[in-house]
Image (cartoon, rainbow, N blue to C red; front, side, top):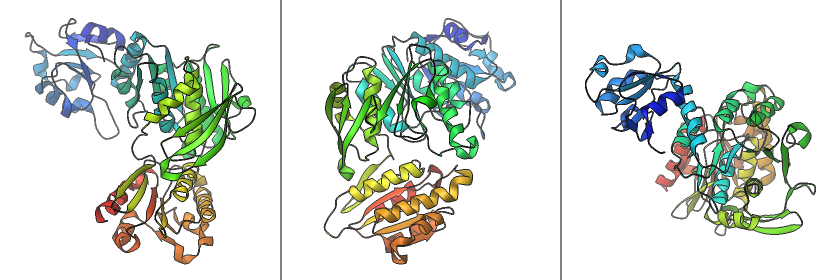
Length: 468
């Protein structure tokens, strides 16, 4: 970020400077009291379990002299010492909303040519990463790191953008209605991508129609000059369902799509190849990342950057540098064993895609392909049927061994019964599996590990690699 004066911050967040010097300057945003240092602007955020206001004393002692607060009763008395170097204290109604307001202000200060939002039930992080590499071929580009896509993460990501950023690529996550609208009003995108409408968070939103409505909040600031790009292979994402006072671009395998995908070849952990057709031209695409589903993600990125003047062939060259965010089909090796670590999150669609990657991954002669699949969360009343669906799909794909982990994962095991009892195992907990992992895993196995984040299956991955 660029330096800000205290006066500029106060105006941007709609606050009141109750102590300090309006001409002081801050150089960095901090929300973690343990990392506060001189020159920082500290926002004490309130979470479910902690309130940053409780650590204001620690922050001030560390030399951070500028804070935005909503609870004045927790400001240490020494902050008002009426001496040179006093703390700059800005009061607001809500510190989270103040952080969001500052991020929105900063975006308006940047020399942006485009603001691109990415959301969807699955694929949004990979699409965001693809977009970043495509846009970075021609423009100074910023994006969220890791999974910084919520009320706190998105504005903090924005504040880290360099002052000369020309393209902002912002992933937007949600669990409930209204969340994406809040993020969209911060970012004010002119281009938005919806990757997929699945069943993630259906427990909170009631139906896939409810999920679609929540995802379409990304268009809340759109006008006739804005564009929505959709994955038309998804049954919920049709031009009729998403229409509005903006342009719609379709991407998918259908012949009527604006960007048509064909001839996808999946080489497992070695990546994929396919052909992308647009306006009568065919473009060969080689992606160095695993997963056939990434053909759609990459093509959505090509469509998006095409709107800012980047030719398909240029965007495709950018993919050669692509590295997807950790724990999304991340290939890890130890000796002769290979683990496909996809432990960040899971839903039926991504489970199936990961199984495809496992089966397409080549190995030594006689190597086993093992799928370790854990619970998928936030599926509500759809949970049992969704886990059964994944199990049946696994039965069709025929891994050499399927290990289902978790309470609802028993339905995965049930759905995969066609593999035979000797090829299907079920463990109620991750810990129970890990006690047996030495006995189960062989040193030449190719192993897929995937589950919802709450299952903490990355611990299983680490145990497999450490023990082998």
